[in-house]
Length: 393
Image (tube, rainbow, N blue to C red; front, top):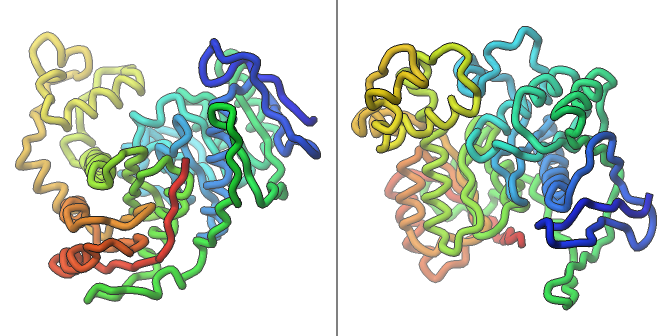
């Protein structure tokens, strides 16, 4: 197949719409549904991300995409009981395969942003992964293959309209890429930068020069994720998964704050008060997500006031105070942070430190590198200048 006709472009008024190859066959096959323009943008960007994550870590990988940026990305490490609970997979009666674990992590890290996502899997989608996907609000999934059982489960999702795309894992695009803006064609070489090597960490200007094996792995995850995130962007990673992604901000400190706030929310969801919230029976998953988000914010009274809390809780829970939140966030450690370009000021490091960052990989090259380095040294943070910019537009 050389082309696929789409329902419409980014918006319903943008017709006609299609994807096509000027030469050769499309490397994708639609197994179910009718993917749209944005679906394919998410699918093809997210597929590149998980393919490179697997190459960088030698582990199955998954990503959750929304509007051409990842909401989550992860590799298939086993889930602790706490993570199973906050990702809402503690009730399943089947074993989670490595690719299912990767998906649960990618989808669960920022459940608010992942609502209605497009999923990418580096490996064959198996039955366990399909059963997890079936439970979530999602637009579609792309993978190199699907088992018969998984495909049957996914074809029944969304009354038979769920988008399922198979991609040829051997497909290699042309080295020059093009796109049009305002009728003008842009052309550039594809970004084929290698983010799999430990030589990324050769240039360490900080006093602390010790990067653990897990830190190097997590920083590679951050950098690969940033390669497919709309710039400016930064990414916080811990234990094999992105826990906070700040995308598309004009100021780098705003990226760092946005991603840091998401990382804090991920960590606060593991607070005993949140884990033990007394939910009413049969509350919808989306309502739980929204309620948790408000409960751990400064607007907690919006879900705890009389006449409101009864919609969500069997008994009125005690609020999570600012002091309790601050104390809990301080317990988060060994977080890694990647940036798609240099940090211009030390304020980014100050904010990152508040969310437990102990390892950083960034391009370097700012006129204020000395300030950034000294701020890292103040907190004993190990930072590598990788000399690579990862802008993505």
